[in-house]
Image (cartoon, rainbow, N blue to C red; front, side, top):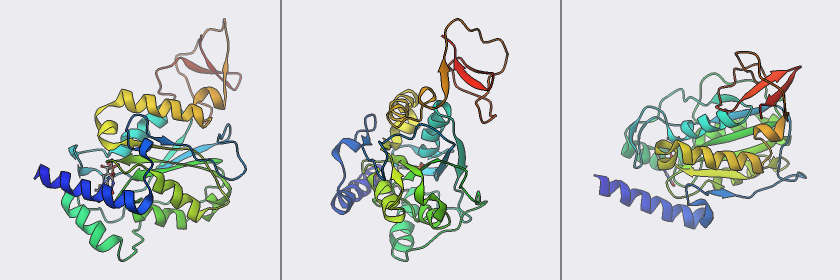
Length: 266
Ligand SMILES: Cc1cc2nc3c(=O)[nH]c(=O)nc-3n(C[C@H](O)[C@H](O)[C@H](O)COP(=O)(O)O)c2cc1C
């Protein structure tokens, strides 16, 4: 059975490489990033409110067995820890098959040829308040699942924002997220994408964290680049530390708020 999965994925990756022009550097799960800048920006976002929109499928997946949380969801955990973001998870109204082979067949035989727009639960409403929107998920047959298109079509207000593609894959890279965003929102500023191998995202939290950390720095959305003020000789007094948007800061760095500013203890 495992051999069959490997064969399926090999075929998939060949198809993907032919169809989408895979970037070789994206294939490496630990260094997998492509530099993409769009609009009139300098490739960084620097300020503003950020939202992470993602889709991730639990169940059986390539080389990870049955998982309770999808690989992209684990990558999102690192983004939440290392940047000031809110999140919206795209949850399908009708669940995809949890069996890997059934899902592969469903997507290839039904979702893609019928150009479906699967519905999702609890749309977050108008996104105008956000400056930076991360959009990510897995790669399915060389492209983002079509439920991502359902989301993009429901949110024309994404057109002039900083958009940040990301996701997990089994070798194809995530450049198809970048091209999809370019196709839907040619006026948007599309920043560098980060693709991580799903197996790495599932099994290796520290490698995932380190790839995410350097990527966030490069695109200007890590804590230091956004609104942390670095100070000396100031002690964190309170027991609890909060990010500026009011959510509890759950990272392992010593970051706290004072006089409505966020500080990192030195
Ligand atoms: C239906 C389906 C199609 C897939 N097609 C590809 C593909 O074309 N290229 C690739 O690299 N990985 C492919 N994969 C593997 C997933 O992209 C990879 O396991 C990813 O990490 C899953 O993310 P998730 O757990 O967040 O859903 C496919 C997986 C499924 C279920």
